[in-house]
Amino acid sequence: MRSFAEFYPYYLGEHANRTNRRLHFIGTTLVIAVSALAVATGRWRLLALLPVLGYGFAWVGHFFFEHNRPATFTHPLWSLIGDFRMWWEMLTGKLR
Image (cartoon, rainbow, N blue to C red; front, side, top):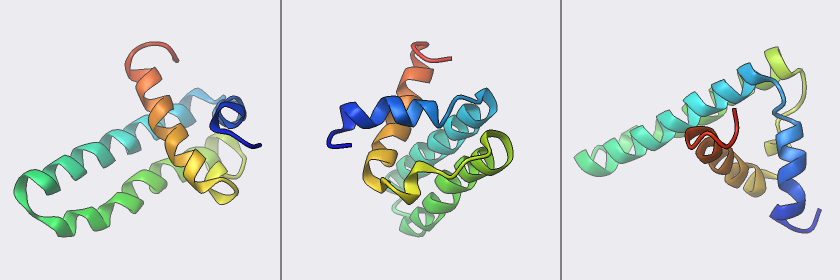
């Protein structure tokens, strides 16, 4: 895959399970909220929680519900972008 446009359909295919997508949504929402809290309060140590929150929920979704390996292992940057795009599409109702 040479572009995110090529990658994203693959990414969505790896997130076909609704529970997995919901766990990703929860994790990404927590990442956004904790990041905003850290910036607003100057409590920069909160940023250490971001990998646990983001990857923790996502990996539970992949290993226990989707039964596949996270795309982060092979395409880390595109996977991160995909997480936020999928989150936005779920938030706006474009993706269930």
